[in-house]
Image (cartoon, rainbow, N blue to C red; front, side, top):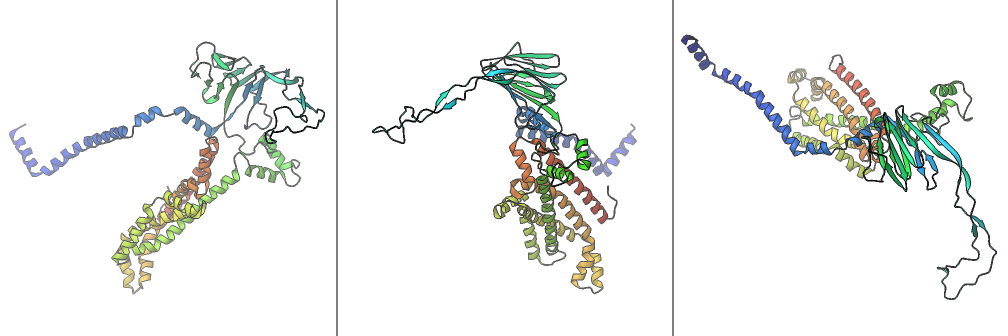
Amino acid sequence: MSAATADHLEAVALRHGDVLRASAAKARRLPVILLGLFAYIAFSWWFFSIGTVLANAKWDIAGSYLASWVSYEVRPEFRIASDGSMTLSYGRGPLGADPKPEWVKLETEEKAVANPVAAAVPAPAVAAKPKAGVSFMMPDAAPDANQSAATPVAPQMRKVVTRAEVMLDGSTSVTVEPTRVIARRGSDSLAINLAAGRAEPVGALPGWAEQKRAGEKIILSFGATGWAEVSGERVTVRNRFFGWANFLFDTNSPFFGKPYSEVLRLIISGERIDPGRSNLALAWNNICYNAEWQHLDVWTKLLQTIVMAFAGTLFASLVALPLAFIAARNITHQGVLNQATKRFFDFLRSVDMFIWALFFTRAFGPGPLSGMFAIFFTDTGTLGKLYSEALENIDDKQREGVRSLGASPLAVQRYGVVPQVLPVFASQALYFWESNTRSATIIGAVGAGGIGLKLWEAIRTNSNWANVAYMVLLLLIVVFVFDTISNALRSRLINRRPD
């Protein structure tokens, strides 16, 4: 580089040193930002013990809950008596009162089973005199003359299960016998001997079997197919199926277990099942009052949530609108009044909607009215602040133009201010209406009514996650519909096509 060129560059640097320094600062800005972000993430990881939380998390339980959202279990349970007889029960399952699934194959035989019940044979009545010094509240231990003598009953012949095979899928099965259980998963198999109330595996346990202590129950995990629990006196198999069981008709419905084609035929041209009403009315009644899914109750609670959100947002918008004109400094030239109204807005919105819901639930009792007031109070403060800020940023030229025509103060606000802010006000109110549909679900969990309370009750029982998924899906659909409507209305208000 020649001396002249070096002198020229130095002269340029002297004349435009601020530009060069800014470029150097920009070059260092990105590494500094990345370093600060990394330091923040590392601090958060340490401060909140994220690593420990992830390590101690019970992922298997979480996976089981998620699977319960979209599937259901049928639970055949075998109880083994001391005489070697086995009984099978399904509990309160989705198969009805007399389940006979094809995937459970039973071998039975007639067997004499002892009956401990004694037949009462009346003894001759003998007049008995009370002994001296014996309390009538505590009778003598000797048998009373009026008591019946019992004679044993001969064993009865009953049909008992001697062997059962439960096919969970094509490669997974559990075979149950009075003295042993054989579990198969793919090419692996495990034999478990049952004796003296103990479960003893034959050989080493495979990776899908677990036993905490010798002789105690053995848990067999078959993945998404289900699992089984084997102990000395009981074998429980949980076979999992994808879908929601008995979603339309419960086990008490006359349509239960029938193919949809047959149900449709009965509704259209079949003979009346109930002489008092048509099959269509009967089917609709069975759907609405389904004991397992409670459709009518869920729909009613969902409607309560929608009305709660709409009414609370509507009243908040109507009250916040005039108060916003008082809070706006360029509309109302009263400093004390402006500040008092703004602080009132701050008070309303500083208390969370959840806290307001707790307060009104105590005041009015559980129900949608408490939820509506909670939404009304919170949104009045938030919308009032947003509306007043929008009013303070309007273009005064339009207002001055209306005033120059000799219009009254009220007409000035009507024609000079409202047309500027009305699309903004309506857009914000529509967004809050959409958002409050979700918020109403949360505050419903504390007693404010609606589907939120029913959702919380289903979660708290920890036994029917399919109902939880059903209600969550309904909420997603409602929020999606309201979001579409709100987006279309907002787009029309600001004169542009919706996304």
